[in-house]
Length: 145
Image (tube, rainbow, N blue to C red; front, side, top):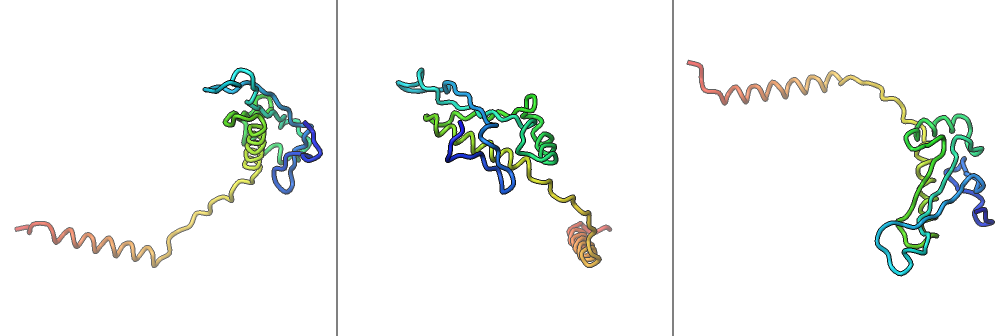
């Protein structure tokens, strides 16, 4: 649903998914309802073809497809929202959830951990504390006659 006030879904400073790449499906929400439960299509599903998106660079696309491989079906990501009674609020919730999922997937991995060794002073303090503890326990034993 392209609109003048929504040029696209902003993920971060560099990535904005155009509204033309997003498609919607609506259905009835599950669970208890009231008078309008059988007539209102308030559940919203937001569908985005991540594999064919022009909003991503090749590096971003590869990172996204790798990170979300369990959630994608044929390169398509589907986000469903049905926690609100109004369709508009469910649409906003689905947009926010899609933005959060994609932003998390595009975040670069943390730097690799560099293994370190304890300093000499730390090793000496640890061994001294162990020796003191050993002496305390030795003093608790009954004497060897």
